Length: 53
Image 1 (cartoon, rainbow, N blue to C red):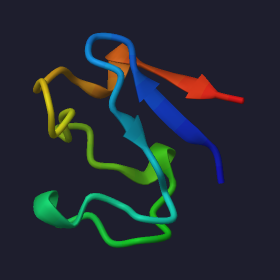
Image 2 (spheres, helix red, strand yellow; image 1 turned 180 degrees about the horizontal axis):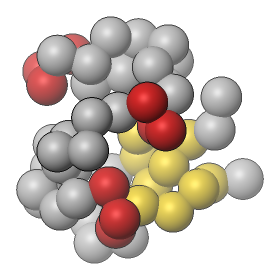
Image 3 (tube, rainbow, N blue to C red; image 1 turned 45 degrees about the horizontal axis):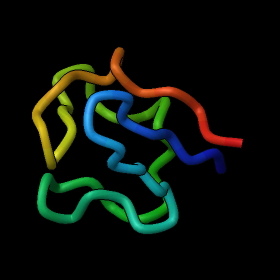
């Protein structure tokens, strides 16, 4: 599963870890995150993330 980086603050969403503080379980692909999910560091939306190779 691909990782995605927040272009605003550099936070990397790792699907292997999920985002437990936001109720996102490990093994949740970025594409399956809720539309209202935001960066846990700076609060921007999913549209501010880019796929990391």
